[in-house]
Each structure stands twice: as C-alpha cells, then as structure tokens.
View 1 (cartoon, rainbow over the protein chains, first blue to last red):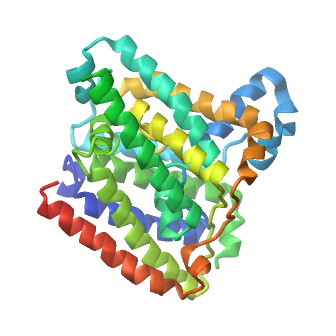
View 2: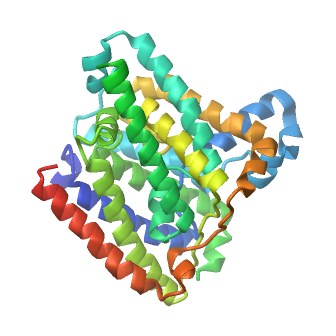
View 3: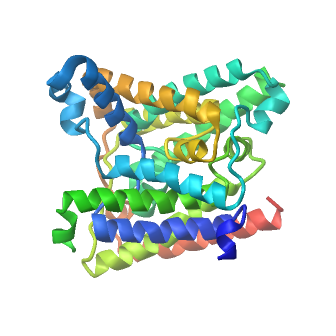
Length: 173
Length: 184
C-alpha cells in the first residue's frame, strides 16, 4: 500500500484514474462528474433559512432544487478524499498563504483572503453562467465530445491565462 | 442500462459520496488542490492541470463511447450558446485565476488544510453561484444569443464517433510528448 502514502502521483495516472471513475459514474449513476451546481444548491439551502419554502418557487431552484443531491455528496466526498490522501502522505498542513502568492504579495493574510473571496464570487457566477466548471465542462463534457464544453474549456483557459498574467506580471511585477 | 439502480435515490447519494472520495483522493495526489499548481498552469510554467484533464478526457471518451455502443450508458451533453458558454466561460476564467482554485479543487484544497480556500474562496463561490441563481431570470435572455444547443462533435460533423475519438486521442498524445520533450 506504499502508493497510498506517496506525496504525488504521475498526472497521467491521476487523469487515467479520473477517466475510469467517469465510466463508473455513467454506468452506475447515469451521471457525469460535475461540481458547480452543488454551490448554487447550497446558496438556495441557506436562503431557505431566511425565506422558507418560497425559495422553491424561484425559477433557478425549480430547475436545480435547493437540496442535497448526488453532485452535492460528490463535492463533500472530494473534501474527505483529499483529507485522507493528505493525511496518508503527511501532506496535510493548515496554511493561510500559498507560497507562490507569498513570494509576490507577501505574508499578510487579509489581501489573500479578500482576493480569494472576490475570485470565488466571479468563479461561482461564471460557472453557473457557463453551465459547468473545470470538471463538468472541462473533463466530463469534453470526454463526451460536447461542443459547448470544448468551447467553455477553451474560454476558461484564455481568460484564466490572461488574468493570471495580469495579476502576476502587471500588479505583482 | 442499469435503470433500476439509477432510480434508487438514497443509494445514489452514497454512490455520489464514494465517487467524490475517490475523485478527491486523485485530485490531491495529482497536486491540483494546490493554488501553486493551478496558478503556475495559468502562468504556463507547470502543465499538471492540462495533463490530468486531457488524460482523463482520452481515457473517459474511449470508455464512454465503447459503453454507449453497447447501450450501457447514455450521454449528457450540455447545451450552450455564445451568450452562455463563451461569456460564462470568460467570466469563469477570471475567477479561476483570481481565486486559484476551481469548484472541485477548492473542496480538495480545504481537505488538505488551505484556509484561504475555506474562509475566502468557498464563501465566495456560494455567494457567486447564489447571485447567479437570483439573476437567472434576467441573465437567461442572453443565453439565446448564438444558440448551438446540446450537440457533440460527431453529431455536428455527422460522422461515426470513432472518426473523432481516434485522431483526437493521437493529437492529445502528441501534446504530451511535446510537453515532456520540452521538460514541462
């Protein structure tokens, strides 16, 4: 079981593993792997605390009910799976600032957390706008050869690369 | 198709959870739960993200189209349009670079102890997705612009899927060889 305690696996093996995992989700659950609707559903579940069952009457939550579903459980599972993997390899580490950020923008926690918060809002909005994220479009959609998913994945990287260059070479440079 | 199995809702929640555990394990072992790996991909210094995504695509498509040929699975292509896919995709990319995680890998990042992901990113994504849900009736109008629907490349070109799968797999493999040869 030595492979379980390794810090990193070859990216090709990881990718092949995810590809094989997707065969099983189609076979056993009739579902492609995806993550971003879970966050929209969560927002609806939080809204339910304030406005009660009126949330179910909103157009979006009629299409994507504000409740726990297969994909929501998948996102929860990712957290557990990553925790186990990190624990087995001794890589679990409570950390506020990633080292690449630190090297350019310093060790102050507040700017990093605010940037992550802002980025999260844009990411959550964009993911639901595009109808999927890096996993739903970028992996599951692309492997079904879906036209919209290939276009979405290319757009993710075009603006992602442009924005990363702007952040690190303009603001940080 | 295992339609009987698909209709067992409680069991399916468990399947989703188990799938997530395996997926999260793989993401962490691949290193893509790390901000550094994602941002260095977008800065074109580290190609781990692309390698994982494309090898998942090659493996996945060969298996899924094989199973589809045996009528064991059905496809779920997402519909799209210029106003939906391109505009949404470009917005997503900005968030991807600003946050340095994506909706799947942020869960892996939290699992390995990244507090910027938990305190900033997670709350942000829920708010952003919630904002979209609130604005959905208005944003929906833009979705009709340049509509191309839920279609796959083989359907678009009206060819046998393997006419796409075989050359695409070879192209992706060639990309891998180029990346390795360049030491990336």
